[in-house]
Image (cartoon, rainbow, N blue to C red):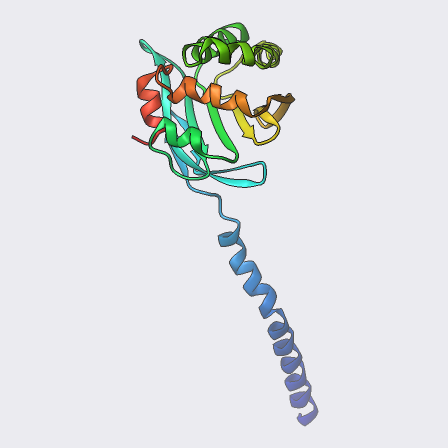
Length: 210
């Protein structure tokens, strides 16, 4: 009986020590979901935008969102990501560092239509001299977009400014071509969205958080 009692005590002691040794691991597992939790998201026209984004090694914040709409047709939802909040085009353009325009498509758009709208928006917000300088970069960007053929509802187009490289385009997370236009291309594109003659006044206001 005594031998059985002592054997049981030894077994219980070993089990207790085993669980104590696992406590640090259990604490880590308990903390894991919180440390890996997905960032909050914002819903716009049925599309979800993360409130943060990583571009060129920097953590950007969602500055604002909006929808590009012509009559009753909604073309895309858009989000502007910056290092710090900007309430005006001047503040957004003056910021150094990475930036992102994220477009989430709401309908099918042929690449040619996409290119035409992009060029029109850039031209309306640039001087003739600026357009002359941007012409090679615009042609390169036109080719990258043209290679898509068309974009579909639900497609995500990221147009990123990477300082020292230029405008970088990704579609559904896949890199498309090389960086375009050096440091001048993204500001020209951003002015088409939030400049003096934007694509859409309501879209501009939304991107600037108004």
